[in-house]
Image (tube, rainbow, N blue to C red; front, side, top):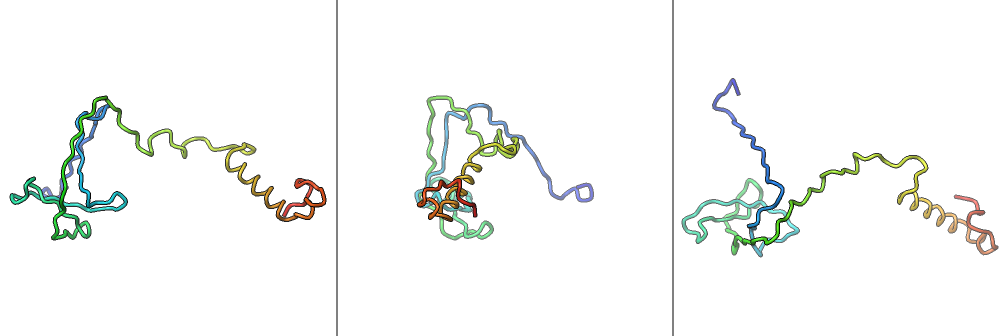
Length: 141
């Protein structure tokens, strides 16, 4: 930056939304868009649009489409109760930061492993089961 004072300038602002969500919530509504797809939308002011804005669905993020997106609207909902913000998926507690199972602990993985081993023993020696021997007495794989 010191070598080029006219170069890039970064302004970093910390966003603190507060504990509760706003009571007036606005959302973009467009029935043409599908929830299971990703879109790259761009908007530009236009004196010809009734809303004052034209929205385009870009072919790629850097290649704007000539087709405008319509119909669309801005929905506004007023909440009656105060609602706290939802926690993000990676908020604490994070499973990868917690202590893992110790040797000899019984958990879902060890139970699944034991059931697979028991099933393998049964399938390996069905004649032993028919003779009256228990599964635990039959030899393992």
